[in-house]
Length: 185
Image (cartoon, rainbow, N blue to C red; front, side):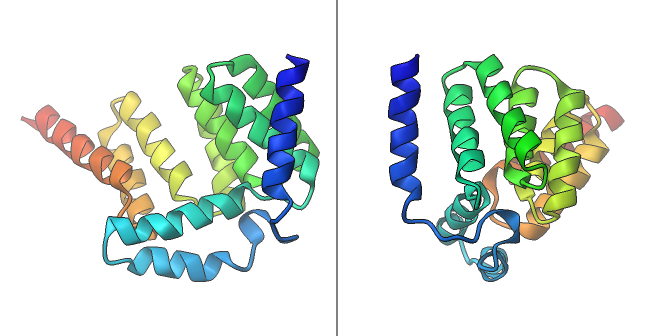
């Protein structure tokens, strides 16, 4: 495990060494990227801006916070949910204004079925970054999991006002509308 963490940390350090001092949801590069994302003519074009936004959201001026968040993502992706929770919580405790640490923990909590915890974390994300279409779509998914179709529709629509080409939100919206219509028959 120690060798794994050392290798992972080295890889993260090498990846981060070229990034700017600005970081997170307050980065001045984001405004122009969100404008381009909103006005992208296709999903393929939007994908370029979406990737840049996610990259910036994951940056943090405190390198330890950034490293711990990236390690948490690695743990989450490999199914080591307890370790991921510890990593994301450490990042949040160290820098509670880092929206993406909250967002990653919200995702993790959704994956393990802690919907209330996920909702609470999404609320923190949106408080810090009101344009976080991922958190909005996450709340849409939680609402859909609870069969609250109207609320799911609202969240997906909000996500789509920020990112009109967001495929996941479009699919979630269509499914929620279909489920709402099926209930009304």
